[in-house]
Length: 291
Image (cartoon, rainbow, N blue to C red; front, side, top):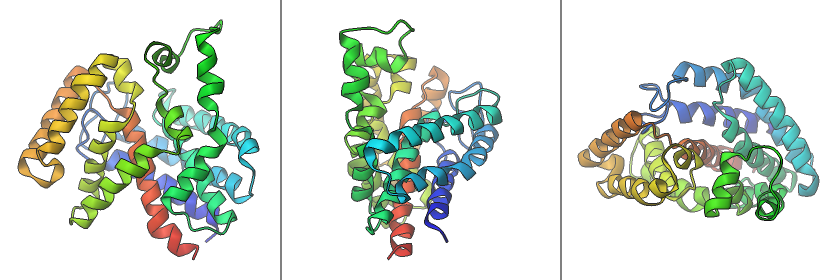
C-alpha cells in the first residue's frame, strides 16, 4: 500500500471514530447532537466521507520532502480545497474546519517521517508537523497588538488580544503537547487497562478537555467559565473514576446533560481527540508498515 494511501486512510478513519465515540459531553455522536441544533451524526459522517479522498494529498507534501518553509503554502491550498468540499457536502455548515488544519499538519509530519526513513512515532511526527507553522503566533497574532485589520476580528483573534489565548495555532506551533503529554498517554492507559476503544476515546477526551485552550467553549460561555468552572467540572469526572467506575460514568452523563442544555460544545477537544487517534494508529500500524 502506498504511504499516502495509508496515512489518508488513517486520517479518514480517525475523523469517523471521533464522531462515533459516545457519549461525548456537548458534542455530536451516534446517540445525540449534544449542544448543536444545526448538525447531527449523519451530517458529520457525510462530511467525513466527503473529505476522505483528500487527506492523502496532505501526506504527499511530506512524502515529497517539501521543506517546512515551503510546505505551508501547499498545505493551506489543499486545506482550502477540503473546506470547499466540506461546505458543499454539509450545505455550508462547519463540521471539520478545525480538524482539517490539525490533521493536515500531522499528515505532513507523517509523510516527512517516511521521507526521512524514520518510523512515524508520535514525538517525531508531531515535531515535524509543527515546523511549517513555526512563527505563526508571532507572525499572525502578535502584530494585532499594535495594528488592527480593517476587517472584523475573528473570535480567536479577540481571545488572543483579551486573554493571550493562542488556541490551536499555539498548540501546533509548540509541537502538539496536549496530544503527546495528555491525550495519547490517556488513550494508551485506558486500552492497557482493558477498556474498549470507545471508552478509551472518552477517557482521552476528558484529559484533552482539561488541558486544551478550547476556543469553542470560550466563545459559547466566556473565558472565565473555561478558566474556572469548566476545568473544575471536567476534573471532577476524572476524579470520580472517568470511564472506569460507575460514579465516573454517571458523572460523564451528567456533564453531557448540562453541556447540551447550556449550549457548551468542546469542539476543540473533539478535534484533538481525532488527532490523538490518528497518532495512535500511526504508531501502532504505520510504524510496523514502514519498518
